Length: 113
Length: 112
Image (cartoon, rainbow over all chains, first blue to last red; front, side, top):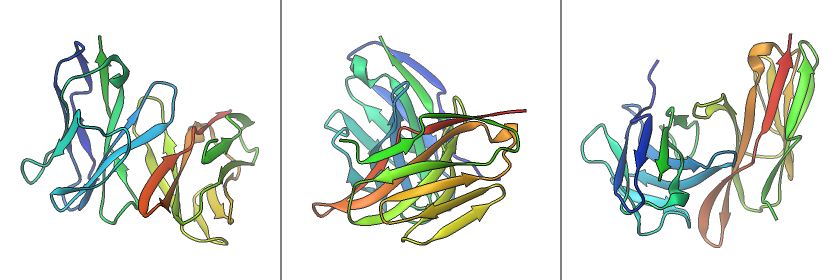
């Protein structure tokens, strides 16, 4: 069964450093998303991506964040200058139809020290 | 005020003891309501999408229903493997843009 994969599973970084979180969505899916979940809190939408451009973003997704689909398979989330409050689990998801039946990856746990 | 509220926060059931989880929402312009299951340390797993009041979806021991202000996830004769956190998420339009808001989830424990 096809699945969304994410690397790394855990990333530890120093405050102010740049990080890139990587995702490989399901191959025939058209829509791609990033979410985050701070420990013990609810899942929060960050951004959606379709046809090589951002289709929606939340208030959380400020200028420190960017997304890219550099080739036909990878989907990345970059945080330019990490803050302590960026520590969270980051989930990538993909879907064939807009917003519907999203398949989530296992997540990357980001720890900012 | 939270736009999406799930209750109860936690629920313990005996195997075979049926119950319901609630997701209430205060938003207008509903585009869809989603139910997910999340196991510890994993990403959410899609269960159902509901679009309009009166709609029902079923999958094995789970049945999701939707009214104008809330959704229920009914669990019939649950088994220990149904233990997980169940999340609902509401997709809606507000001020000309689309938003997706998750509830905090209901942690379900089914004891054998």
